[in-house]
Length: 102
Image (cartoon, rainbow, N blue to C red; front, side, top):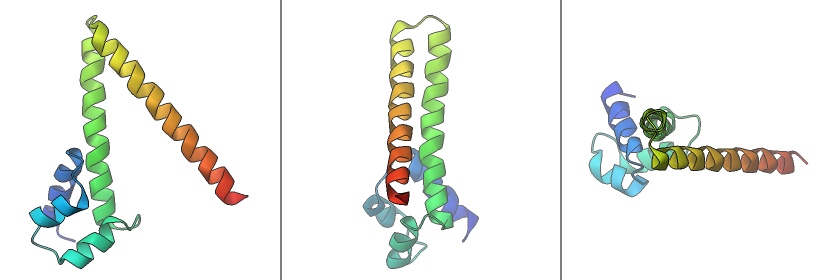
């Protein structure tokens, strides 16, 4: 996979664009292939998109942390809410994996 395409997909992931938008914006790959690889957890395209999503979350959290450290009450609350939400998601995923094993 061309690095330029993967970089574009990572950028689109930072914006949480859905596959329909991505297909419209990326013309360098066959649409069927792009759609298939987008949902394949072992593909470079999936990983590039996921990296973009996580980078965006990281950058938001990083900025909120900076603001919170400077005493911004809203930033403190938002950061705590985001942490709690991630914890819930992690617990839910672990529970689902446990159920799938049983």
